[in-house]
Length: 385
Image (cartoon, rainbow, N blue to C red):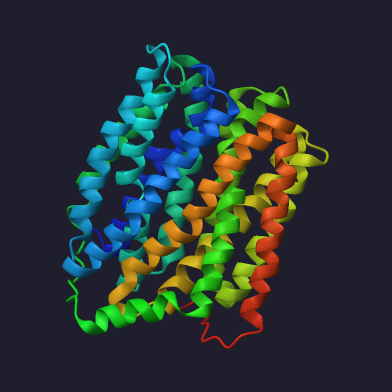
């Protein structure tokens, strides 16, 4: 019999292993079917925008009825349908509209899964970092293996791998404990209003918007950037592997540092900004690989801090809703803006010049993070959950 912690670790292992190819090689696939950088940005924005619209709804339903596991299973299965529409772009003469339809279906059902899973882990009292680290390792190992698969069988392979992985994910959900339901009482509605007017939560959302823009734009165009500096597609997977190993190390080790969440948030945003500088100066393959360690560490610190702060600021009855708001209103809004603006900038100044703006977005997020040190906060150490 596996403990609940081991079951969650297995869940994150499968979840992140399934999606690594789409995250890392999506735009290379779009390039192969003849889409421009601007069109890639629009599709990327749709992928995030569809999630923004539905994530709060999924979160409220999960909190209200305690059907988090069912919501995740339905989301996984329907997202497979959307994912398998993408390869049809290889046989359609003008695939852009079909890619938009596939993006809507895929994202509307895929996007709620991670925030719902995060809320279940935080609500269980299990150390989030120890669980999330399995996702990072799975993502890194999977994307490293994906490079040779893409080289051998083509970029459409990423969607087949996703379909297989999500079937395994649904099976893995069965033995997890069922979260309790919450009545939609006046207290529930009052708690909702209190959450969205909490200035600490609003500040967290603003920081998340900028980090969402920086990391999503940087990650989505990374495979195109690797080609732009005359490196092979396999280098994309190798770089992601280095990055996710650094993520996993921080997810596991951060609790031992005993730092407050606000300190982690500031550190994560600053490290991310500095790591992207290496994409611009000197912008060589060795520098890019060197950047993966601080980039992975910075992303892990930001993720730990943002998920923990959202859980801390939310009333107990709104755990899933707070995580959905962080993912949709915060990170999601930033991702939409980053995809659209990033695609346009890459078209105008090139994908290498685009990273200057990624540095600026992450740097501004770092400045905003200082706001958590000048306002009253009940911020707790990372050792709590």
